[in-house]
Structures are given as structure tokens and as C-alpha cells.
Image (cartoon, rainbow, N blue to C red; front, side, top):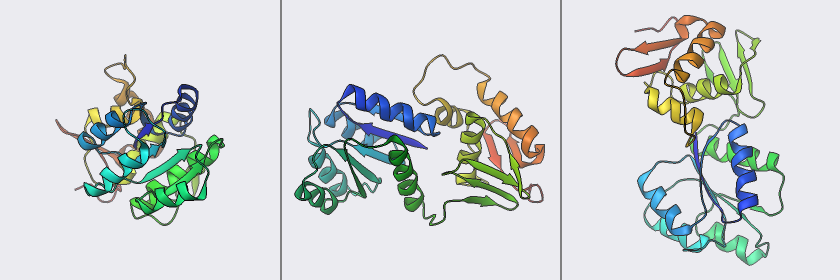
Length: 223
């Protein structure tokens, strides 16, 4: 899942970026409100983590423009403005949640996951396909009730494929989920992680659609 952080404080922004990446998210971080609005107009994000005191454009103005443009990306406001009036203003303009600085990174990750799930229409914290279960919050995976031990990259791959079972994801899409905006990614990195994931799930769970990409299917539904 690709998130956008709009935060001008270098220490807080770096901490949020690292924490969310470690939780398996693909993260883009900008420090400018105008740039954030441009990115949101050109890219699809699963969540916007929004500071209010941004240069270029205030966070509340950005939020207002988003909702006026009928952009329904979930918005988690993260700010030092702790007055009730600021919280009410943000929520009234269409924010989905509000977190006051300083905060615990674990709470940020938990709230981010909850908002992404809610927006995707998943009230329950687990993602399932047949005998396969994935729990984003606890990062547990079970197949036929048996726990599977996955690396962070393998977990992110499986979570991505499990968001829309049967949908074909290109190598480039999976690469972006795994590495975000990082450079110097080896050409076969996705294939290596998919190979390892197949060994743990069983080869029939992940199908290669020649020339297009990869999809997750139940072994009994391979057509």
C-alpha cells in the first residue's frame, strides 16, 4: 500500500517514513503542501498522513481542496495543534482521524492500518482467501491454520496480492510496493521474493500471467 506523508519537520518526517516502511507500507514523503496537492492529483494513494503547518500551503487548505475535488483518500492529520477547535476544523473538512504530536510510532502505524482497512471496506483486521489468512496488525499469516514465517518483503508481496485476489499486478507495481521510491533495486528482486513466497505457500497459489504480471488465486480456482 502506497502512502503519502506531508510533513515539513525533518526529524518527525524521517521517523514516520521509517516506521511506516518497516510496517510494510510504500511511502512517499514531501515537505510542501503545494507539492502534496500535485502528487495527490497525479497518483493514487491508500492514505495521506497530513501535517497542518506546511510551507507552500496549509494542511487544512490542502484538505479542503482535496474534498472539493471529490478526492476521497483517507486522511490522518498528525500535528502539534492540539486545540479542540483545530481538531474539529480538520474533521469537519473531511479528515478521517487526528493524532497529536508527540505520538508513538506504533499508534501511528495502527491508525494508518485501520484507516486503510476501513476505506477498503474491510471491517475485520484479517484478509482471507480460502484457507489463507493474513493479519495486517499482527503480521501473522496462516495456511490451513498453520503459521507461516515470512520475511518483511514476502509479507508485503502477499498483502499486496491479497488486497484484490485474482487481479494481475505487474512486476513494476509489485516492485513499487516493495521498495517505494528507493533506487538501485536489482532487476530480479521481485522474482526472487515471489519464488521464496511460492515455496512457503505452495507453487499453485501465485500464478504468472505471461507478459502481464502475477496474481494470487486459490489452487482449486486456477482458470
